[in-house]
Length: 68
Image 1 (tube, one colour):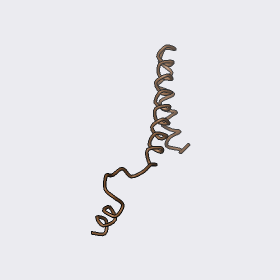
Image 2 (cartoon, helix red, strand yellow):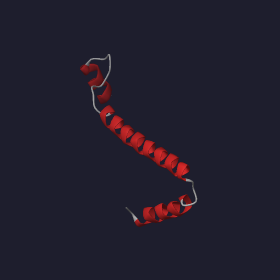
Image 3 (cartoon, one colour):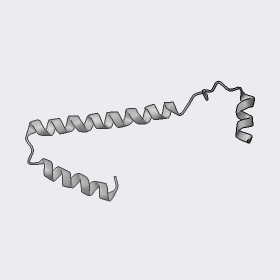
């Protein structure tokens, strides 16, 4: 963890000390969902980067278009 990140975490930790247990649990749940969504999004983007080029044109037409 970078030093600046550590400072931010410590600052937030101090703010959270005043929250109720229920609020802290809700915050943990929200952060957990955020991490899962971020991880899922990265994985989804990774798999979207693969696959065939979709086109109705023939390979020769595409090549000629690129060359032009």
